[in-house]
Image (cartoon, rainbow, N blue to C red; front, side, top):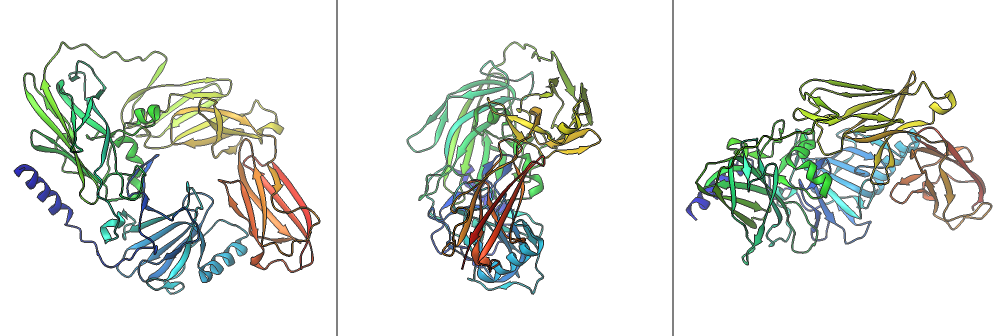
Length: 561
């Protein structure tokens, strides 16, 4: 207990070196904060940059400024944060409010003026300091589900002057949480050919034994050499069932701290290294995230603290050791995992690497691969370490290894399409083939001098795909030739089976109208309250274009008083 008390004191002292104002910011909502997603939670290719607050499965709740300041940025996009507001405060911090359904009236008018000026739903604005000032407790927007949101909620962030995002709970926002973190898996890893775990090399699953006191034991293991560990863990809050992220990790070997990590602040340019922190191959294969309690080459995450030998431990023959893992949430609830280790050497057997038909990549050098009509370029340091990969081209399909090795930088893929007819070239695009059905997922494709190019953040299977069909358009809530005097909205459904929707343009009597696109439901919506329709007889025209330029047109006449 004395050792643990000293450890907790050191951790608390180090953590307290950064002082965050605890009574400056209020909650952005006037309902209790129940998180559906916590700060730095593990997500695909990134750490979660804020806190997702439940909105009782509703949209349209009042969203308040957490303190006085000025609106420094407004963005409307189909994906990402959807409709979002950034408020800069006198103390230097910026608060962010995402997935909004709409803005407060003054801000809404400001945004719509820009949208009509640009004739675009997607806009981004950076108002001047004195242009859109806001008071504390002022309603600036209404909660929603826009952008890449899986359901109604408010995405809330606090950023510092260096644009690093910070755990909002550090500023005194409160949630109910008396639950200890959960652990569902423990693994051990050998570092090299001279290391063994239960007579095996590589990743070894360990037998986890939950205790009645909510801590965990692991069945005693036999090991030798340099090894590391990993866990699958998550946290829950009192009023939610979501499997959210934890807040801290520490490990101890025979009482000595080896590894520490706190999930309280990070920069956006480092978040992709989550794929080095996690066991990427396991996640891609099993859809479960093992957090590695050791640091490998190229992992520059700022979340790590107090590393000893990068978190690895060295096991000597004929020794008995104890390795402990401490998992904490923000409120200090903790769970412990205890792993007894008996040192035992075994006869060394060299590791055999299957290098047949594979190409060796030197990670620190740029690499060009060529076969038939395909070129692939890896910038230097695309990989974290030297590795073998598969590379094969067959019938315009590129097999670029399995997506089990993380990339630091995007890979560039090029296809020479000079063997295609001119009429076909404009309908081709590069796609990643997804899932067991190899569904073609469009990659942003550029064309120049018979060369199609695209970039991707992952290995996998890619192909040339031809799309000759235009998008489909159908009216949802009206018919041609009808009176629509009592209607507030015009709604359409738009879909495209292959390359996907690229853009759309709608006019009434030749005048551009604002259509809001919700890709999750494939709907376009026009609001008559925009007051751009004043005639009795109206000619509506909607043109929808896919990513290779195929267009479809919908035309209708309607009447309105």
